[in-house]
Length: 65
Image 1 (cartoon, rainbow, N blue to C red):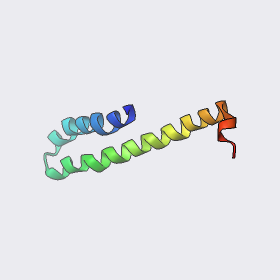
Image 2: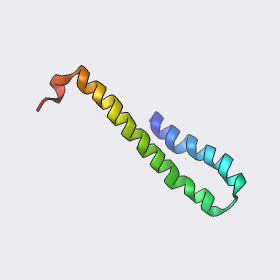
Image 3: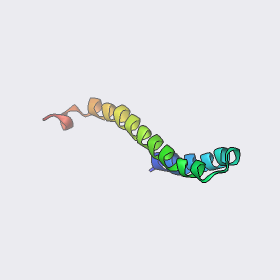
Image 4: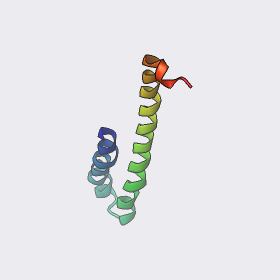
C-alpha cells in the first residue's frame, strides 16, 4: 500500500507540479500515467526480490518443496 501510494500518487503529483509547468501540454500530463506505472512496478520488483529473499532465509521450511 505504501509502495502504491508513493509510486502512483506522490510521483504523479510531483510530476504534475514540476514537469507540467515546464511543458504545459496534454502529452506531458498523459505521460505521468506510464511513468508512474513503470516506477511502481520497478518498486514492487525491488521489494519482492529484496524482502522475498529475507523471508526465505528466515523461514526456509516454509519454502521447501
